[in-house]
Length: 461
Ligand code: MSP
Image 1: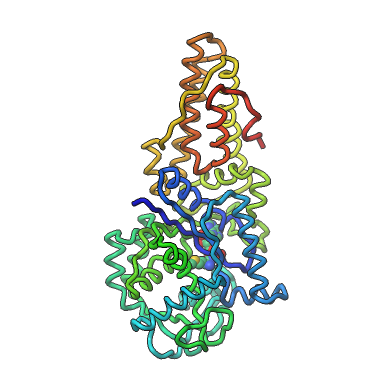
Image 2: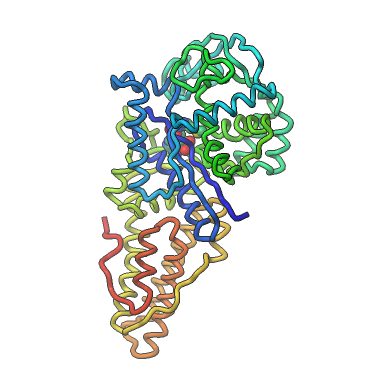
């Protein structure tokens, strides 16, 4: 395997980016940087999901047409990813012409192989625009969507159907044997459990929604937004000889679409399947769901203003294990930042550089490979565990400075002790590169050739 294709969900342009989107995108970037440093052709695809009722609603609120509104918000996403140093290969928009073309070809193929019923039939259901999906009455609380607190729309119209039910056995087999890895393990079990309960055919078109991609075989319908959105991965992959994706990284809210509906669509047209779908947990802010009404939404810009680019990338993953749910707060971020970066790494680098400079030390050669203990942690998306491992190496190095007191030593003795410490710092910086690209680079430059002191890397908050 010499390629690694990672994707993030494409984000709805109903609103500007927040740290939920940031979390997934930075994770995908960390992984892509890791594989690049391992010498693979690693590419990250991200972008925006711009069709559907949700976007129409949002654009109306802003007195703009959907395309104008999508242009504006997709720019905000691009800006955010630039700010956070996200190294993506393409920012795909579902309004891009090539995507529309590939999506239509895909839909036509589904129709030709009869995976889509030849004729539309009446579909009735309760549709939540916030989720852009149908919800069963059991999912509602007092008749409202529990996430959006809105009443779903009673939908009743002629729709085309995708025969999802036909893929039940095949999907069960592929997921249980890890031919499609659904991770973490708990999510694999959950998905298999749901598949076992049975799969129903799904509606894949809209007769009364213009803001979408017209079905190639019946232009009076547009594609259900989720169906064409999933195809975005294939738009890039198929056009660049880069399909299949090695990894679809998603939040747990949209795992079903990625682990069941998407593979079924690919099976129907006999295409290769993604290798892995990883669903990370959801976080709350200060114990509460992030919401505009509560006023606790954190933007990527706010994070960066406080912690800098690398600091922001770091604190998000140093707080709780990646697959699990967790809680964030500014106080918690501050604590992690100060403990790990200002007092931890930053302080260690400053102390050792100063002593090395005083002793005219020239740095040994920097490592060229990742620590074998860290490699599987990255591969399994155990970002928190990778951070913990490096955190303990930083404390060990700190302890070594305090125990050996290099400032009391002279000549070769001082140099030997300091050289060991410099090696440790180089090792830590090398292994932290995916999280802290700019800082690691700075450290590795500072600790090459004659070592000099430098301004603090992470001023305390
Ligand atoms: N447009 C669809 C995805 C289509 S992919 C073919 C969509 N967009 S979204 O804008 O709602 O983004 C959802 C994603 O944002 C989640 O899957 C998750 O990756 C991220 N998050 C949003 N809020 C989050 C939290 N509170 N916590 C963690 N991640 C969150 O769904």
